[in-house]
View 1 (cartoon, rainbow, N blue to C red):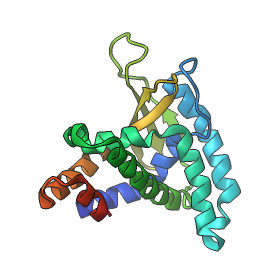
View 2 (cartoon, helix red, strand yellow; view 1 turned 180 degrees about the vertical axis):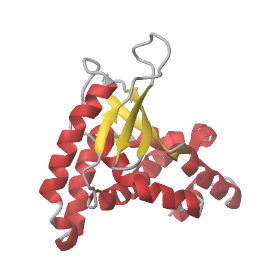
View 3 (cartoon, helix red, strand yellow; view 1 turned 90 degrees about the horizontal axis):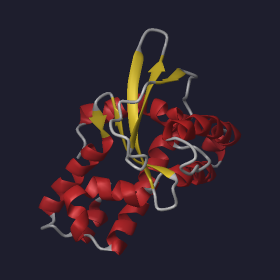
View 4 (cartoon, rainbow, N blue to C red; view 1 turned 120 degrees about the vertical axis):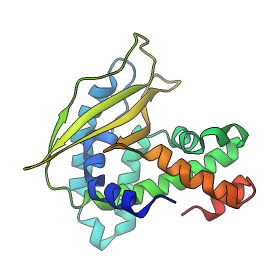
Length: 206
């Protein structure tokens, strides 16, 4: 399981993760860079949140549906599932990977959707890329900084080009915490507890 201290840190800054364009409402192909996709996505995300915010207290299911629609345009949940399963992904069937992708879709939709409600308008700045190499199809780490009144927070997320030349999210890091690896720790522990039975792991995932 993710350690309590790390989970509290994730909860503290999850608003910034959601705001930074992790979930743009439009998908853009390779004619746009990963950063350009994120920048455009910020505006579209905030628009969707503002339109649906009132539902959080009156019709929460509908609110999460609206958030999920945005998530679906930028996050490749199958790729996220493979990142989390890591070395176990090779032994997972397509059906198991798809099932885990759906579990993560629900988990992340509620996790980030609930946090968006308390967004307080922090300033966002994109940072120069540290990506090495000239391969235009290589994964891209998009770095950014969320700037508050008396502190700043650096974040990054990993984008990749899918078979349709669309930039999609498959992993992210926050204040040095790699979310994919943290969830892998949980997945690996459950595999040990369930004799490497992936279906049993998915049954017990929380």
